[in-house]
Amino acid sequence: MKVRRVVVGCLLTLALLVGMVTASLFVDAARPAHPVGFQMVSVPNPQGKPLQLAIWYPTGSQPGFRLIEYVPQMLATNGTVAGRGLPLIVISHGRGEPIAGRADTALALASAGFVAAAVTHTDDETLDHRYVAMPRWLTDRPREIHLTLEYMRNDWASRGQLDPARVGVFGYSNGGFAALISIGGVPNSARLATHWARPPVPGPAIPAEAWVHDPTIKAAVLAAPAADYLFAPDGLSRVTVPVQLWNGTIDRIEPFEKDAALLRGLLPKPPELHLVRGAGHFTFMSPCPLVIRWAFFCTEAGGFDRAAFHRDFNQSVIEFYERHL
Image 1 (cartoon, rainbow, N blue to C red):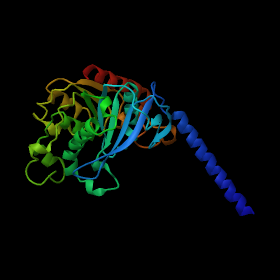
Image 2: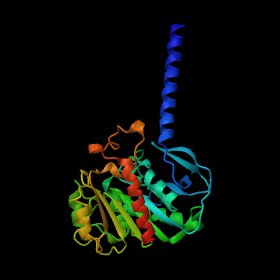
Image 3: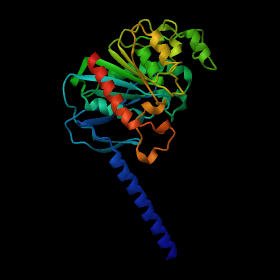
């Protein structure tokens, strides 16, 4: 009888904890100004396993509570797509970053009338270590951005509601590096060969045709882009689209002096630069709910308010795309 009481007590405590966490997540759930739909699709990938694509979009359907991994949002899962002539933004994530890391900005874009398609690159599939090798991500990521755009324009069920002339790219960290290639950048093969412990590909150089560009992209937002110096001295000379560039003053992974400051000088046209005082590398990921705010990618130094920053950040990103698309 005593054992039974202990078991029942443990189960009740567990149920209470689960209820408290659920309630906390519901309170923290992002509620966009306009209804947003969400769906997950699988995109064929001729050179590997299918790409998983998370899509946020304007909707007229009724939203409900949903967890995007650890980020709670109010979304209409598989709701109808609302509107015509919708601009499309493809999102390329950082190394090891989950879909949740982009969920905040994607939600804001969709609420503002954009379709935001966040691809999970094959180099970051933790369940399949065949794709983790450094050589492949260099060329795979831009190719996968192009595949994502091709799918959205030609095969997505609501492709007829997109405006194919209004396409942008958003890249964070390694995704920023990939976005630069997508808009015409070509990394310096000699620099690539010395950047990692082993050459990125067999042979002295990566062939020019391996770098996949997408000329339909008309604007790019880069947040803490990685390894920008690999484009020196003239690897960005063919980039013509407008670029919005973000970096934090205390980013220890991609420091401003090493990356964004150099990138500013490599681009033919000066980017719209935002240097955020007190921001680190993970600041540009989605704000975390209270229950996991202790995680290393959720913490901020010096009391920096990530949630408040993201409200301004997302609005600036939206306004940039609206001006240039």
